[in-house]
Image 1 (tube, one colour):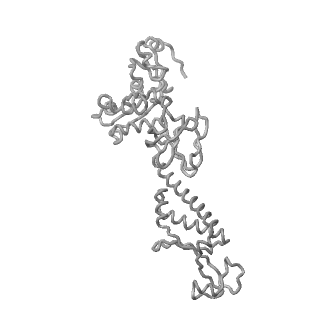
Image 2 (image 1 turned 120 degrees about the horizontal axis):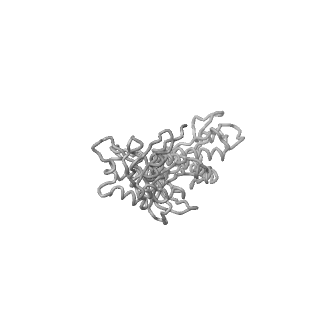
Image 3 (image 1 turned 180 degrees about the vertical axis):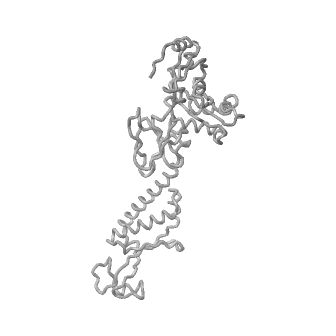
Length: 373
């Protein structure tokens, strides 16, 4: 059997983005497995790829015998001499197998083995490639919708943007470009979607021969990466993002810090006339972003986190990791925010429980006796 293969190997390698030697090995293994199955051989099959002449040759090792008990395994001395002039009875010779001898069944079996092996290698390569992109922002094209999830074409794989990882007010149509963070890359199995700590449902692979890539537009790290893209000083480490709290699509708070006293981290991140942070807001469908300066003093940090309100007094209860804050009566709604969003984000950002009080209530509470633990 002599088959011209160089162009085929090159084409398959290019199409699958798999090294040529992998395709070559898969081809040889596939043919060997097919011949072994067809002829009942185990170790008596030799497959050789002659690169110089661009030929694949298959040999059956047959025993030279005066009596032919099994034509698939035995050969007469006269026939053996055609392949090896030094052939002797009791010895073995390599007999080339013709394409006709191999047969359609064996060729199909070879094709299956090759397809399986190439798919396995391709999956491993894709997994490693996309695993390295985990936690990074990618851009893809909306391909279709499945049970509320968005299937996004990333070129070599189709990823899933689960309904739970979408900004609720955003609407997409097929063909739209979409940016998202790669949240998780799974080689085998499905992805459990959790709600309030319990598994709500599972997302299964789109293609079993490819890894499952899960995207997100709601994770705090997506906002962090978008800021890094817009603000080189963050990417270069001159400014550090200490914490992020989000209500996706509505509002977010970002705490920034720089050890360089000559750098105004808030001003740099916000940009001239708010240009930098506005670009991020636009990407997040109008999500309002408060950028505040982080401080090691929890009280100062919490006061800043309650921006745009400006607390006048506070009482820190460190053992309870709680703080009582006094704001002017006309700023109470500002400090709490619509639906409590400002207070909620300040709590998530700082990790402290915050009691927001009017100045009058604050003074009254301070005069009350405190219970001792």
